[in-house]
Image 1 (tube, rainbow, N blue to C red):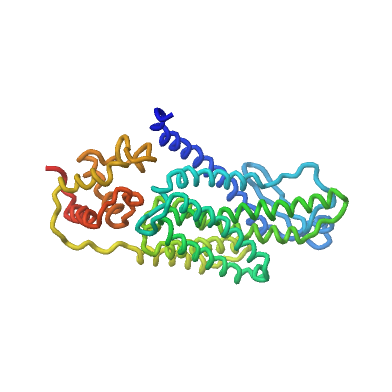
Image 2: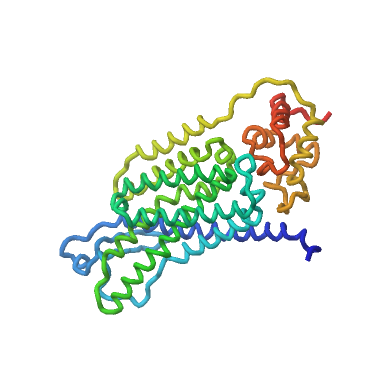
Length: 403
């Protein structure tokens, strides 16, 4: 079997590609359905009192045109008088998104925990410890959220939202003290995603099943199940923009590599919630620009606050010295055939094995290795601060190429 060991990173790369693609597709389906139904709930208008619709228990309806056809969705106050023969359940979009997301988390992070989860400048952990912290955060997130929902606090939307937001920020702060910044971010996102799918699996769908069972038995459904499901659906709606940012955050090391990465994440999540709240109100006929304005101002203030300092003039470093650093510290991963275990191809397709390639990628090297200290990944090759300073001096002097 050792003969085929070299294929393991390549196979994992293909699994990464396929599962990530699946995760994006199912995520679009789930979030799209969530956005649509919250929009529908906020947009439907009650029928006229005494009308045929009102008499049959319709609480609201909407006329829409799409794709060349007219649609007339109706929502019942509790349930129709008779159970329809065909009833579509919106659940597999959620389940498929979480299953593919957890598979991706396993492939990218858990199979290569030392590179993707452990940052020895933060905490010197064994792989099983880092993975245990990650899995534990998912379980803890759902447990705390569900208990808060079932408590009296869950009856007060604004207070509940504030406490839940504080819990997520605190979770980000704690994870940043044990895991790499990138892994801490993705586990906050996985925690939110787990809460969202558990809402569907543990409460929304079971409640809907009880309503359908009551109708099938000739009884009247208990409206409490609909009310609880609506509350959790609205929570999921507000979670979406924060979790979508975290899904793409690995591309933006300026956020997760900041010394206060948890605070950076808190600001971005708050901006997402404010922007989402604007759209929810707008669908109800209320346009309050203060919410997106506040969200944009938060993002602008954050951009200014985490901007890198202006470089200090230093003596130029010869290219040969730069090449030696890059060859020793970067080329193990950034090569046509990486020698670093766990990598089948160069990250982001950046190859730094020739003088021309190093010179061409000077700005990227400066940003990732000097300003953000995001590379080498988890500092696997032990690049020193002195070496980072030399790379910085070379770039700030105009990044002279080989002579």
